[in-house]
Amino acid sequence: MLVEDLKKRLQRIAASAWPAKEMEQYGGWLLRANNGITSRANSVFPEDNPPAELEEAIEYAISFYMKRSIEPQFQLTHFTKPSNLDEALDARGFTILMPTQVQIANIDDILKTASKNAVEVSNEVTDEWIEWYQNITGKGDYYIKIRRSIMERIPPPKILVWIRQDERITSLAMGVLREDWVGLFSVTTDPNYRRTGGATAVTRSIADWAKRHGAKKAYLQVESDNAPALAMYQKLGFTKFFDYWYRTLEV
Image (cartoon, rainbow, N blue to C red):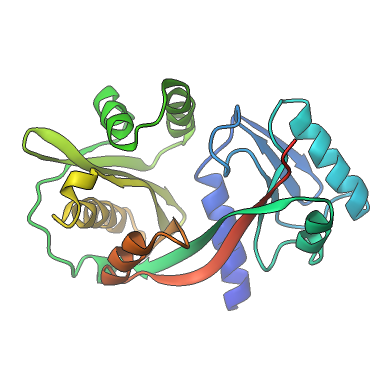
């Protein structure tokens, strides 16, 4: 498979692993809405060309989000269709938000990393996992409620993992298996317990689970300015595969 085709395939896999509550297919564009929580679930995924001229299609997308009181937003890559979409959105006043890298690694390389932390796992979203995710991230109740609904909507196979230190959960993550890829989501560590091996432990645990389910490669999505996370993932064998970013229209 050509590299460009593999990037497109992985982008589709990543989109399916984080399903929005409401999705509308508009030609080659997928319009996603989820109460405004998480950009991934509240943006246009322009995999192929829309069914109308570009300006008309952009207007349609703006209207879709305005009806739902959500800021219009597009998730873009260098292989977005049509190829001049980013330029057209820029001209319409859409600003760049959250430049992000999609990174990939061979599961066997991840498993070469040693970890001494005991990991707990569940195939369901648990109250305890959600409670500690909120404690660590400081997110509000509404955000957590909607994010949990997305996680519960994800069909199996999926796994939630966490570790405890000093009688508290200090690192946690979720893995979602699609085809022969596993995606890592919500990798989170208590700031007071960074560099203690927690993130490595939960990542390795997901990789081990995924390998037993037939996966060969892993991917994750990390913001391009998150230097500590980029350094950690590099040690685990992850490398950048492609970039994506959002264009959002403040209204």
